[in-house]
Structures are given as structure tokens and as C-alpha cells.
Length: 415
Image (cartoon, rainbow, N blue to C red):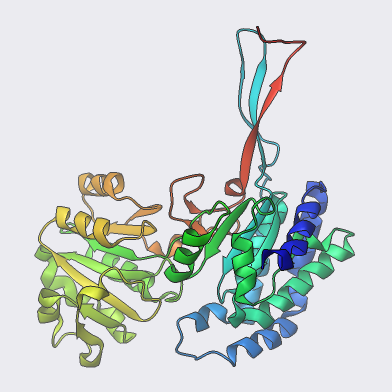
């Protein structure tokens, strides 16, 4: 099975050996941003072919959908990447040994970066732009749900590369069949690192089956804890934004945890959610307090499986805790190490939360919707890593590099 796809991987490896100047890289990316805008109608038409095949109620539908506004935002992110300094060639550690050897570390590309993702056509633009800026080649395996969208995007990328006399194999889109993904997972010696983006099921499959090193971008099971010292107005706005800004993304709120001393404030905390008809799965105590104060058709009794669930929809769990330590325990048990937040005006309490919660991004009095490469000043992101090796959190340009040791001598030999 792997043999059928080796030509793709060989082309990627070959393209990666050709150095491209940052000046030319930036010219290509600016041209790509302009071309995305110019070909908006074409992209929307191809995207519609995919949308027509998907159930509108599928949580992936919103991720799959392109709009003129979203394409404009994608173009802006590409332009932002152009404005960022490339980390390539950066010397970030240097020393001279007692024997006179000069030793330093220099940032270099990871090499060939494979990305397996689902119905997210924006990822095609993001991955190429970030990889190209950092001297990496990308091999993309998008989901069959986004086949027409991804094919249209890669054709635009290839045209821009061709216009600048650059090897089109700097960006390779594999066929949509599952066998292509399995081949990518087995591409030892061709692909340097693999990054999955999508559901927990996809991530688990890649992690459990890949023979290529994996940087895990985990699902977002996100909590916000409203502390006994929390500000009610801040809390209501933060919770509403974190849950409803865009429910299909991994930084969306999944579980609200509330200190029991603030029970009487619970209806006000979720008032805006009720206006949006967000379905709440409330534990016994929360349900009792909210009954009669929240839309009846949207209030439900929580079951055990509602905690630790990434909803990706207008649904959210509510948990009442007896003390701050219980909130920490709940997050430790059910969180996915993605994004966690506390709403509190007590500096000691927030400091303990920041130091004790194990997540890639930890917030105080802010919406978890900010866990995003562009919002963190990275231009865009290739994914949000929930692991601790190599990279953690939104992965931008620097996270797409490794380093090599540079050793300079003057006839040195070792005794």
C-alpha cells in the first residue's frame, strides 16, 4: 500500500532540498493572499459542492463552510505571516569552550511535515503558508468531506508557485481515500513529522498507528471556573463569548464550573446562553437552581458522559463544586490539557490556578476563544499542541523549526 504513494513522498523530499530566499517566499505568500481574494467565487462554488453533501446539523459543517468573509480573514492571516520575521537561521545559543571551539544552536526546518485533518479547508491555506515561510514542505491529507474545497485551494497554491518558478511539490495534497492516510502514517524516511488536526477519534488513530513522529494537537475539552470571588458581569460575558462565538472550534467552552457560594448568581451567569438557546446539561444542584430561570426546552439533567465531552455545538455542561480544590480536581480529571480559565478577582486564587492547572493555555478573567495562533501574534497556526514535547499550545513559525549544532574550530582534534 505504501509503495503506491511513495512517488508523492519522494517529490516532497526532493522539493525540500531546494533553498528559497525569504524575499521570494514573502512574494509568493502575498500573491497567494491576493489570489485567494480574487478567486473567492471559485472557492465558494467548490466549497458548496462539499457542503451540499453534508448534513447541516453535523458539527463539522461550520468548520467546512467557507464564506467571503472567512476567505478575506484567511488572506489577512497569510499577509500577517509575511510580516513576521522568519526564525530560520536564528542563532539562539552560543558559547566558546575552554579549548576554543565555538558552539551554537541554529534554527532549521523540520523538513517534510505531514498533516492529517478533517473538514477544515482553511487548514490547507494555513499549513502551506506556515510551512513555506519556515522552509518546510507540507504533505496534506484532508478529509473526503472537503475534497472539492481542498482541491481548489491546492490548485491556487500550485498556480502561484508556478508563476514564481517554484516547485509545486512544496505543497502536496494526497488523494482523499483512507489508504493515503495510512501510507502517510507509515512514511518513514520520507516524512519527518506528522500533525493530526480534527476529532479525538482522528487524533487517537494517528497517535496509535503512526510510525512517523507525531505532534499531537488534541481535542479541546474546555472548562471555565467561576470562583467565589468572581465578578458576575465579567463572568456572564466571558462565558457567553467562550461558548457561542464559534461553537465548532476546539477552544469553545464545554463545561462551566461554579463555586457553590455563587449559586444564586447562576441564572444571571447563563442568561445570555439561554437567549441563544444553548442546551445545558446541569448537575443536580445546578438543575434545581436553574429550573424556572432558564428556557425549559434547553435545560437538561447531566449524565456522567456529559462531563469530559467536547460538544462542538450549542451544548454545555454545568458543574457545581464545594470548594476551589474540587474545581481543580474536576479539570484534572476531565480536561484535555487544551485551554482552561478561571474568573476571579482574588490574586492568590488566580495565581494558584495558573500554577496548578495543566493545560497548554490557562486564562484569568478572559475567554478561551483567544487560544488561536493569530490572536497570540503568531500570524496563524498549524494546530494547538496539547502535548509537552517540542511544542505546546498554538504552533506558529518557531514551532515548525528544529535546530542543529554549529561547531567551529581551527584545526581542533580530540585527544
